[in-house]
Amino acid sequence: MMKPLEVLQWERRRKLQVREAFRAGLDGVGGSTYDPVGFYRACADYLVPAQRRLIDQDMRLATLIRSRVPASATDDHEKIAALTGRLEDSDAALRAFEAAAQELRSRGDAARARFEAAARTYIDFVVNVLGARSHSLRHLTSTLLSEADWAHITGMTPALLAEEGELFERVRATAPAGIDPAGISTERPARPS
Image (cartoon, rainbow, N blue to C red):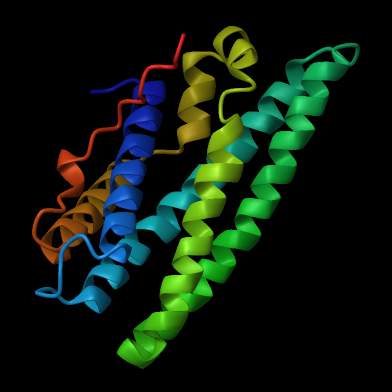
């Protein structure tokens, strides 16, 4: 079985794969031979709880670290506060995306254009606001957190793993031809020297 930090990393890679498959579907990569509404629903059904878990996990991480960083380490406390602020913004962005997904679920294709616009806004936020500063506390997490802390942060259970697997497979089953989230690389390109 994976260690808690490995579970967290695995879970975030899978979310990235679904997000990138979703973005490709929004961009029309699969052509017109698939049901975009079914795919969009499956992606939203995956991404909403996955992002909710990420927000909750990072809030638990911020709370733990805040309690362990000396008050004199003002730069670190500012980074923790910035993370908390981004997570609050992420919650608002997620709620807007979730509302558009609920409308898509109830109105179908009639809500598609609004959903696509909300989805693009949400993806842009995740990539450009959350992703841009995702490792600003790594120096603290690597020294202040134990295996037990990571277990608390992830909050992973066998039931959650099973649910994630089912939702991931639903995304795969509804994806347009040529888009398989399981085949999307999560490797980051090398930084230019």
